[in-house]
Length: 72
Image 1 (cartoon, rainbow, N blue to C red):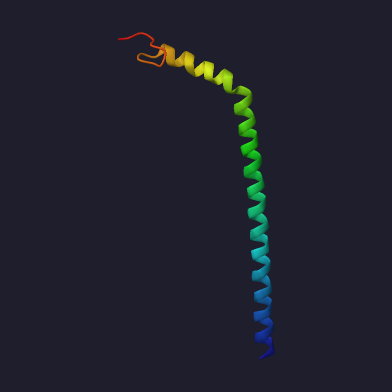
Image 2 (cartoon, rainbow, N blue to C red):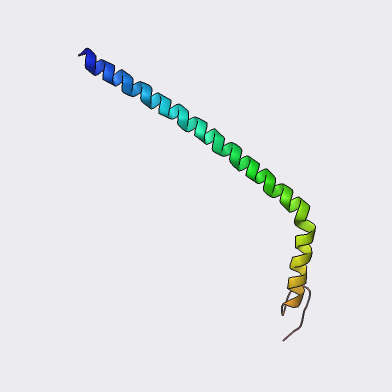
């Protein structure tokens, strides 16, 4: 009878450890996502004006684009 109790106690301890590891992993992924978001925001702020100019230039060259372009 005590061996069954010991086995159940061991199983319970392992399951609790697994939950702690999952929680830690979730926090680590959350931190990584936050850092990636910061890098993306920084890149957009740094390159936003240049990208806007590129897209406006492409739009102006397309027929019926935002800048009028050639109609045809």
